[in-house]
Length: 166
Image (cartoon, rainbow, N blue to C red; front, side, top):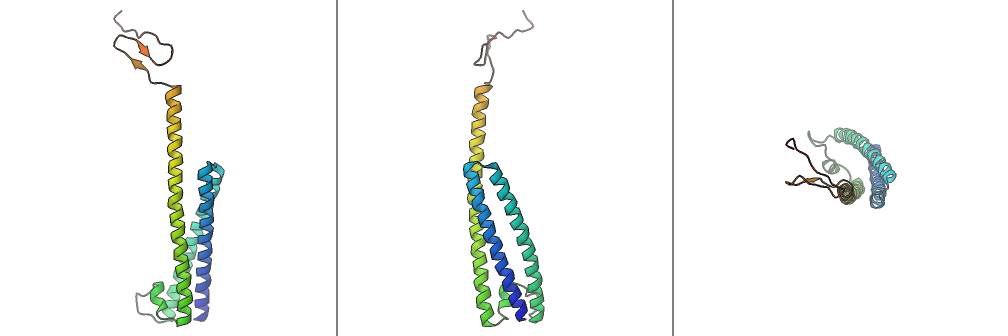
């Protein structure tokens, strides 16, 4: 059982490290979004995807370990959550594992907040790019206006619109 607890604490420490990597990737993404660095955005996206894959793998391993620990502790049927299993463990293990879980929760909240912040930066940057392209489109290709008199007004040299009735 002690080896399972040690293994669980190692998994939790690894998970915390992955969240720290994710936060670093989010910081790179923020800088890239502010400076409009496309390569930096691509790199940070790849880093975030790598971290997400690592987190999924870690979650799967943690679930397997917790299921095995629940069976070893002879916990009642259906009790497989982390907090429920802590009630069956000794006091020393409870405190250290709860502290690690609190650290991971804090890191996850920080990563989520930074991700939302970066989404705002990216949306603002895209809005500015769209507005700039719209302005260039209007300047370079003004809308043609056909008047009732047959005159064409485009902002460029204009001619006359001919109809079938000469």
